[in-house]
Image (cartoon, rainbow, N blue to C red; front, side, top):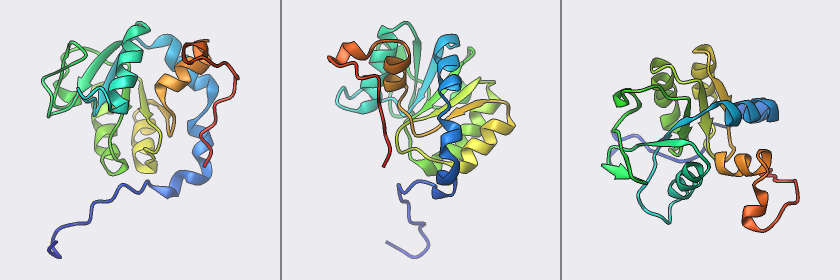
Length: 172
């Protein structure tokens, strides 16, 4: 690797770890799940073994319109894929992010630009800068949570996996 190329690393932005709980408010999560209908999944893969595909499939089966955003795909889950959020020609309620943390600020800017209502960052996707951009743009922010798991927990679908403990915890 030459010295002019930046080192790209998947280590999350730890500056927000101290107050990450404010981005995991159950009331905000429930509001998003109950009021949203159209979800742009950034990084949605056509590979059924990828978490993004499983989450997208689950959300579709529970009544949400899932819009794939991935420049490497043309169609995922029988929906046309878009290269960028700004290419989508209709309103989006939630931008659900399956990308590395360093890409979140640009995604947050696009989410604000298209008038999305919420920015949802999946497990391990942590970006204080992205959260600030989204909040300043008037979006709700959920961070380090899986939309599928939260839907199952808050909408009474935990039994789908064969258990219903009422407790799901991602504490590290």
